[in-house]
Image (cartoon, rainbow, N blue to C red; front, top):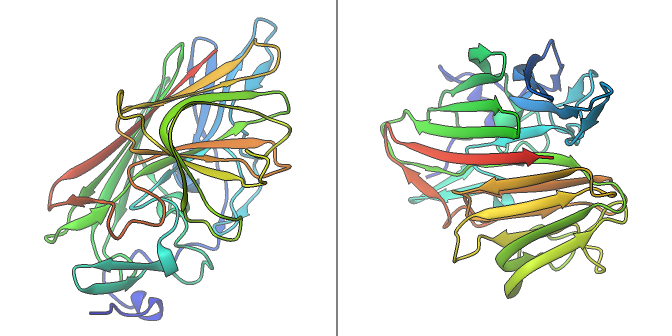
Length: 320
């Protein structure tokens, strides 16, 4: 069974319409707690647009690459902030989902690569709760040919004096079972001299930058360390690793120490099976992306969410 093309999607009742071509940052939700400050842009995919600490002189140190104020293409977003990935993460092979004898093309016109990271980062989220140090956003997405399930997602961003908690959930509102996966995608500053350390059960890599699927495996790697030379991860020139959660702890703890030892950021997730580690050569950012499923294997590696059920993903960032 093949679902209708994207061209017919907009004529169906309940369709949210095509992905907007342009997203424009508006007045952000500003959060603060102690010396930490954050900004959230609901209209730009529920993106955490800034995360910084104010020192005793009043200067801000940005841990994430801050999102600017300029409009941007929904298909070529700035490498900044942190955004939610749903109803799946990263890419599906050939932009196609094979599901219970169905073949579903997930590429949505007019965005040229709308299969990348799903639709959450391209939609406008609604603000359902807000306080000085926390906000809760909601995304309601009716069924459409590219994703024939109605789902509702929530994202909460909460600051305390040590860091930020991001909680992402997706609930299936359709009567049929829905395959689902979640991820969170932060862009950390990654200047020369910064150091990344984490533990993993195994590291997978793609054979080249032209192939984005993990295929080469290093098992039982244990502790890993990478020192930034201004971007990139290994001497092979590959920009992306796919790390399995350690079997003993079942959780990720990935720490970035900035040069001089005065600043650090630690990413933790208790319910992510994978951590995508991404830093292109020559680009001063590092992505540490907790995900519930393996990149490129969504046909087999996904959660099955029944009607009314919810899938959750958390990410904690501790800052020093």
